[in-house]
Length: 344
Image (cartoon, rainbow, N blue to C red):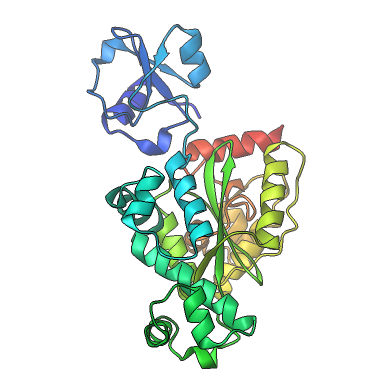
């Protein structure tokens, strides 16, 4: 990505978080370098120097800012989130304020993070996990009472009411179409991603720091149902292994089964995206022509942006007609890094 210093300084002034990881700036008067989104006071233009990598800033003699921590991976979920999710997986019951404090997490902090990154409160997240656990128990042959107890509901009647409100029917009439969305966090060189799968296939790969994630997650939950689960699933394990091999330069084609609820038009676009060869790019107009809708470039771009399985369904291989990168929900710097990885 090539941007002139004036454009980068404007991005610094506006704290453009989507460029974090693509560029860094050093301040000559302090000897410190930062991410573009750093909340410190904006320096004078003549004192600023821009770098494409953190290593370049270090080599030039600048030291890392203690506020924005530019040496940490961009898009990495904080360590306390991993600790909190692990505690949730072990607990099997809603975490109390005391249990959260035991892993160093204040309830208000958790509430803010889950609302910002997943589009739901921490309370709703835990409630969905309990529903997921109860569905697993019921399908394994447990009674309603045992499923309620296993999912840590206070009473069987309370469980029945919560189940009915969430899924529209009694737990004794569990519909075979009710699905549990299973989640896993995966660290990648471009930031942490949230993987989601149901028994039919992988249905979510999205960067955790993106503003689009809450909407993508909400769309999947609307299609599948509100029940969530943490922990292992064969499809999540397979997707994680394939993504790790992809970033290591060892894999060119994903084979994990996918589940992509959407309109017929969206399905056609997403299927065509998977036909773009590794290392190749096409324009939105070429993609529209490939599905037999040459005048629908704008609609194709919209379907492209609604792709919920980043990288695996390679929407990053679609560029502007003039050869520019075009947009990318994960940030154009990530799009460039993905294309560079594939070109090598």
